Image (tube, rainbow over all chains, first blue to last red; front, side):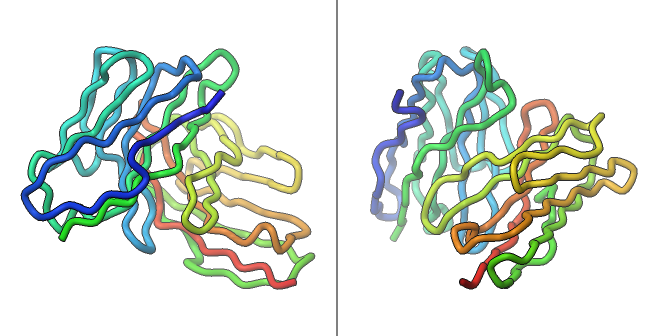
Length: 114
Length: 109
């Protein structure tokens, strides 16, 4: 099992450009999450999907959109990137036969917006 | 705003000593979780304590939860240099996860 994978690992954008961050999990988990982590801070929830077909806003959803493409994949889109969106983005999943409450995190995407 | 607040922000101890980190939160929760993050890496789940539990152990980790005070503590006993990392508490309210800013633990060999 690969667990939670994220692509790309690094990205540099110019202000106003758009991009989609991809996340996939192979653990048959129901719930998936997108977080951002700014230097010296904890994670802040952007959006989450409790189950396939549903998405909900988290703490900091402005400037982002998400798509729960299927049970495996949950993408995060920046329509018009801003320097304030420079951050490390983590995807996570949870909800399986033996690990319902544990979140499993991907390695992160480091995004810089110039 | 962030739900969990860790205290202290930074902690430096010698190998073999115990490390205690505290977390306070603001609203009722389903459960509270502790995670570790090594520099530049993703988070690793350490332990979860449900709202109806008061104490939980896992190896060298001991977590307590006081829902009346809306606080939790993480104790790492007999610390090792490999325990050097940032530790975060996270509250879970119906799938809405909120993390604190973390405690940076340094264990000196």
